[in-house]
Structures are given as structure tokens and as C-alpha cells.
Length: 547
Image (cartoon, rainbow, N blue to C red; front, top):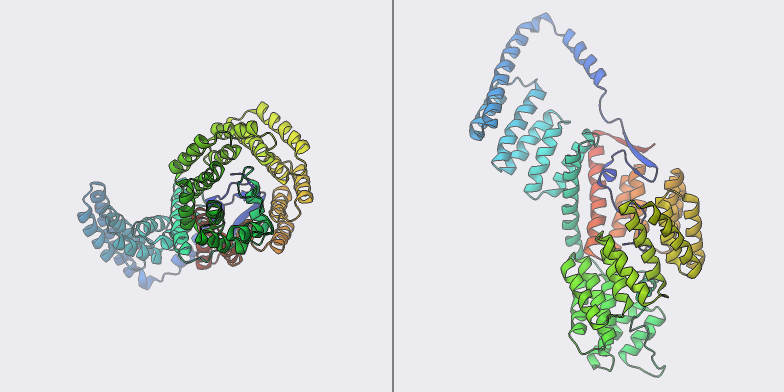
């Protein structure tokens, strides 16, 4: 969903975070000192062989005889395995392990790994992990053993080990094997979701920044709360809440709304709606859902009920319940078909779901109902761009640019117009024009910290200037210490720069500010990927640097 806090890049690419030589902008991440040079290894082995003394020739012959027997047993085990005779194969691999000379470490590692494959077929996950661990002690760069132990760890619920092992495999495979990347993506999502749910149960709600809240309310052209005028003499709980909203004293709103509800005042449904809105902003979703449900089932005015339905629909999106989300939008449209907010917000959901035809249709309907709804107009332009991109329609892309230029003329005070057009131009690698548009947005909205993050990202795209990008993003944090977009982006940059410990600190700060499980899952995925990368790099003495 496009917004002032979004990024023109894909939200997250697994391989980048794990260290693949892919790019965010033009910044590349490479591994140095990864592995011992193969040619040097061969020379060392040859030299070692020539130093065997004649006195040891007899021992060597005995050893050869033992390894020959072990290899015959391994071959028989392989045949049994392919014939699905797993118990027989296990017995044969046992004998191969016993017969194998202890100095034949790579062969021993293979026997353990083969036996673990039998245990995997039997779903004996502890034995799989144990044998793979033996194999890796004998051969620390054994890709098959890492992948098999990763699968077993995932099956047994040890997602941290599963991630570390698949990360090791991805590095050893130079990130060229798609199946390993897919496995890593699945594990990261599962681990991120697990960590997010654990964190949500313990987190302390954090009020977003004043700018964020102001931007949130601006997305509702027909918000019934903002349109209410309260007499200066009124002393009810809702009157206090409305004055707090108007003066941006947001911390006082929930208590003031609760006061109105206790007294069952005239504005009880408006108080429920406003309290629910701030529960949403605080990430207190269960409480928000209860309050919104009460409004929806009440005899409140149509505008109040429709606003509640839109907000509950958006909540269902965050909870990944698309069916209930769209049901609430449909009910809202039945109540008030001429309410442009319905189509604007439903369009954003369709955009998020990559349902481009429906997204463009919804935004067009919002603009048709209210041609002065600047944010809906801009979102329509952006949806049209995504639609044209999706269908590779060059003519439509040209028209989109003309529509954006018209939007800038028509809504010169709408920061979103400059921001989304700049993102489009960034996609088209027109860095200079994009940067100028972000500067224009700052002139209109000088307190928007995310604009400095966007400017920093342009520096990465344009000329891989990490230092300038970091400086701009740090300026965003100085301006708004609750700018989670800044922490997330800076954390990703620090991963690329090899500052993995610093990236973990930044992802933690972003996690503390996350408002939904979906956001938190994404951020934990970033953090978990960096943590796994750090552990693997420390184990192998790898040097991560920007080139």
C-alpha cells in the first residue's frame, strides 16, 4: 500500500538480508575470506602425502582396506535406501561408520549424513539433527547436512537453528540454489511470526508521532469526528477528547472518551469511535475491535457507523482476514454508497493485495464522488502506475506521468502528490527529478521525517552514497524519534555495510514502534535474518563489507 511511510523498493528481499550479492539501490554486499582456496588445499594435501614415511606404508595399506570395506557398506546402504528399506540402510551405514578409519573425516561425514537421511524418512527428527551435527563436526562446509538439519529443526519447532543452518547453506551455495532461498524465506516468515506474537503479548503500547496521527486522519475526508464542533463551555468527556484531538494532546484522548462512556453522554457513539481509533493507533487491536463492533451494532448515525466499518475493515487487513475486511467494506457501501472514504480505503486494500484492476476502479470511484479528495486522486494516479507496470503498458505509463503532473498543478499543497510521483520516478531511475520532488514535499510538509528517509534512499540508488544516505536518515530520527520507517531502513543499510550488531539494535527500535502483528512479523524477519548472518559469519570468520 503506497503511503508516506513506504519505500519504492520491494519491502524485503530474503537473499539480500542473508548476504546474497544482490542490491538495494546500487549497494552490493559481498563475502570476503569465505573459504579456503581450493588450489592451495590441493597443494597442502599433496605435500602431506609426500611426507608419509616408509614406516607408515603398512598402516596405510590397512587403512585402505578398511575404507574399501566402509565404501562397500555405504554402497549397500545406498541401495537399501533407494529401495525404501530404511532400517536395513541404517544398519549398513552403522557398519560403514564403524569400519571407516577415523582420519577419513569427509567419508565419515558422508556416512553420518546418509544415515540421517534414513532417519528423516522415518521422521525421527532428533536422530536426524544428531547425525547431521556429527557430520558437520567432521566437515563444517557440508551443505547437505546443513539443509537436512535445517529441515529437521523446522519440523521439531527449533526455528532459530533451522534459520542458522539454511543461512549457512545459502552462503555455501553462493545464493544460487532457488530451493534453499525458498526454504529460508518460509522459515524466516514462520520465525518472524512466532517472535511477533511473543513480543505483542508483552509490548507496551506506544503513541505514534503527532505527524503520523495527523496524516492518518487526513486519509478520511468524511470523518464524522473531525467535523463536530464543540462549544467552549461544554465540559463532557467527549468535549475534552475533541479539544485534545484538535490541540494534538493525543495522550489524553482515550481517558476522556472513557469518561464520556461512563456518564453515557450525548456523544457516546462518537466517543466509542474515537477511542477505538486511538486503540488502533496504539496497536491495542482487541480493544479496538470491541469498540468498533459496539458502534457498528448500535443506532449511531450512518456516518459514524460507516467510519467504524472502514476502520474495522482495515484492522481485518492487518489481521490477514481478507474475507471479513471486504465484507465490512460491502456493508459500509450499502449504508452510504456516496461516501468516498469507502472506495479510497478499499482501493488501498486491493493495492496491497495486488488486485490492480479492482484497485484502480475503487480509486476512480472515490475521485468521481469527490473530485477534491486530493489523497484519493493521488492514490488513483499511483494505482494506475502500478496497473500499467503490471501490464507493461507503455502508453498508460506515459499517461500516468501526465496525470501526476496535473495533480501537482491541482494540489500544490498535497505532500502525498510529490511523494508518490517521486517514488514512480525513482522506479524509472530518474533520480534528479525524484530528489527535487522530495524537496518540494518538504517545503509543503517540513515536519515529515519520512521524506529524509526517501531522500537517503535516492542517494543509494543514484550513486551508492552510503554516508550521505545514513546522514539523511539519522536526520529523520532526530526530527521524529518514533519514525519506524527510518529505523527499519537504516537497519537494512547497516546489514549491507556489514554492521550487523548495529542493524540488530535498529531493528529492535523499529519493532518497539510497530503497530500490527504484520509489521512486527516483517521487522522480526529482518532482525532474525541479520542475527543468523552474524552468527554464521562469526563461526566462519567471514568479513562482510561493501564493495
